[in-house]
Length: 629
Image (cartoon, rainbow, N blue to C red; front, side, top):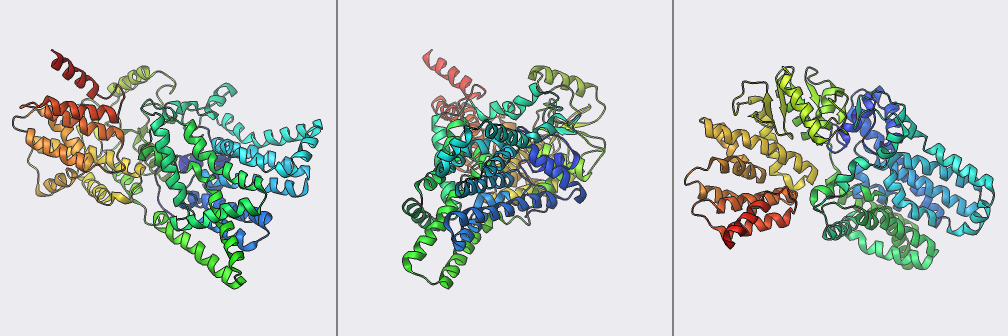
């Protein structure tokens, strides 16, 4: 379990839980209500927030044990299923960090257990408790719960006739609805959070504002990308197939298949159908609903979503082992021994990717950035690292309280200049006016500032006077640490890689500018060489050198581009792929020009990133016009 802050939503949840506020849509009010009560006594400890997820995970495994024991009457099978799911790749990863997913699993399996109890006894109270729990689940992560609901409904099948008869009584409807809406009451906490310190859009003061917030309408652009098409859906399904197969390890797959056979032939058909529908809910169905680019960065973003859908894999694994035990007529002692070995094997197989006790590079880089800024600096935080990690370190831990963090798009922090619903043009104008009149030195990494002074890892925008670049010795060590991370980038997921990528681009811009305007020391030359051996470093080098248009530079630039195209990391985005091809196209047009090669490069760039913002379209159109003339 990491003892320092991590990426994705960890920093944001830590701030919301420690400082109060509203989490990003849909708000996750059940989770934030619990953590805002439980975490403050532990101060700024990251471990306390991470332990909360671990507690939810442990409780979920206990309930899973109860469910499987109810279904199979086998203690061994119940233990195997609960522990194998506990050690499954995705569930384990989410049990280590402050997140909403283990609570989502806990809520789902509690509903499942209550419906199993109803199927066994037919007592109405289990339906009322299930309705209340279902409402609570929707108050935590409603998209996962809604996609998993069809499987829950199938749990009513053994008592469907009795259930329909009970629904003929109006009082049953009334009590079910009362319990359900009681479970939704955590959403009221969003309405009753005035002037939140941390919130995506600020205060949500009316039901009219609450509904689109819960509906996640603010993420429509992310969930429906222009670049995405049907091939992306297929790509996502193929990726999900591999992810599903790897949850318990590839060697467990034969046992899972045996379990599917055993479940179909030795248990009620509705149970197998329930597991299949659950597996398809946040995998196939989710892939069909979403419309985003199928590439590693978005795979990593949505990686936790199928966490509930992976539960059937553990169930089938347990059923498969039990079926083999019975066919082989093994003694109880051998059954226990084999079960222990099987569960330990799953745990050992997933240990390497989930052993994060030394995972501190994200927090260290955040500290490096904050400590390197001049006194009373203003930092414009744009991405999840800057908002989440820098925000947590600055506002919760209290590192560099003299620094002010602001969001250029007026999100998350309470010191917004205008409402985030304001048009982009108006927000840009308000920010520009603010920066013109501020006396504080201001900095950014994700936001382009003009004119810009490169400081390494970020750049300064003002107030003047500015030079094109400065030596910032406090960030040199940070650059070396990130380069070390890049050298071991095979172990980084796409989100972590993207953070390293963006920062190395900034460092390369600084060092290339230093090389163009001054004489580098031996240490600086070595650092620049390391930077230019990375894919982001090559991109940034070409970005800086192409506009220089220096005579005789084409062979060197061509070599950099070809090295970049031959060494594209698997985590790199389509946009960065396309940009390298675009640069290669521009290099081909340098004297002596090679228009045919340029067209090939520009065409590949547009294929990879077919958006109008891709400048290759304009150049390609011009080349075709010139050819026709």
